[in-house]
Image 1 (cartoon, rainbow, N blue to C red):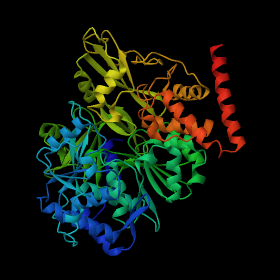
Image 2 (tube, rainbow, N blue to C red):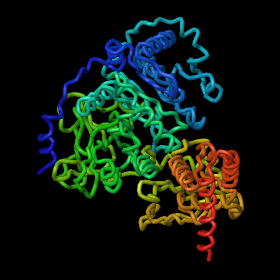
Image 3 (cartoon, one colour):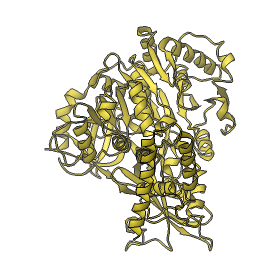
Image 4 (cartoon, rainbow, N blue to C red):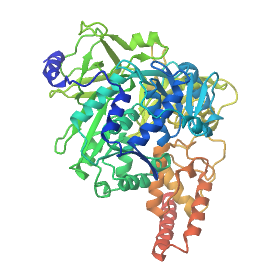
Length: 640
């Protein structure tokens, strides 16, 4: 059976009608009419009902329109995830504009490029971010400092003027040329994706969704507007809660969250943190995974522990409005892989060979996507848009296109699609798209670097890390610390390599090209840092060192080592916190890791223990002492 025959099998049930004339603003305003007094969004101890959220967004929209915001106008937004973030997003869309997320944690150099490339005439932010933001020629609107002027604006719904083909957002993703590229997402694509979810998995009365994804990633669009346009309460999970797995689980339970979107690596961490997730989260009936491959092993463990919970595996990207295929995992169905499933409504999937011909059933082909979810293209990149968004050879209708994903896949006998990898050097790190070439270009700008190659290696199941191989060009050899500090000025945290390996030269293939896969396997050794090695000096330092060694996969840890210089990242911080709490019953705030050496972290823990000592029962104190003694004994036995 050929793939095109499978297309015909599923074509009839995949076409779904939905109101295509309305964009996000009109749909939100219609929902306000239906549920004006319902709670729309909650963050910490504050909330907004639909009527109040609409009123505040209308006033900001009116203020923005005075500065020329209208359809096709891009507006930067740089805020933390908060009630103000939701007000700002709705205001930009209600004014007719498209939002351009600018993460305040990104390096200044990257933000400067995004502002220059997008040429936003208006930047919506808050007072505390203004000083650190590059803003040449940009009108800055501060939601807090300009509150008085904004409060004098009209509270009525503006006529946004947006249509299905109007841009809703420009989200920047990693770029293979060394700079990020902006994807122009349309209202039509967002609304089609939301309608598919509402039709396939409709909300029940009283549901609660959570919002935890940065605006810089397309999953946030579904997280925010999926519930908001249906009268469903949305809870914003603060960043500090996301960094602590126990705190996150407790927050989900307290807020009675019923649906959540996670990357599989975070799902794995949460299952490791709590063995009884179903009991602790009785309301959470739907887990949606996306962003990276979902392994059969993790799927099986999830279904065994939570057999009555829905587990969805979604596949897509910013270029296709977030999601294009879906698969619902079911208990008792053992598979050698977890498929990415079948296409969502009003979407076409083709697996093609190099000649753009459909491959036979079971054969490997490149995955192409067509339909209502397609983005307009890349901002200011007509050549790249033409390369990635090609005319649809299977549809004669004018203007129909296919997006070339660069992903390899095949059809399984039952029509499900299996993801097989990439044809290029793009990878996913904790669900975030990374073009390895962008990191290589940034490394090549270091004055001591002659050449750089970056690879993605799976350290443990579900934990993929970036490894940079560097050939120095001078007598002074850069250290891991030097390279990491340099890259922090250019790249966001998730794009920083976990390890650096210095080589005299790169291995070559017989035709003279760099043999990327012939590079040395990452050794489990402590990288060359600025500080000399000093062994742990106290029982608590020994416990922390043992946890770091296990989590980071290195053979030794110095008292003066920094967690991130050894290859740590945000998800591993969560894992360390969970293990430290389990081992010695101490809860460490994630911020303790940001600038702390192992010795400083141990000192902070010891201070916490001293403060808690009068309040801690003797049994717990004894447990801490015994855990420390076991750690010391274990290390002595290992050395012996």
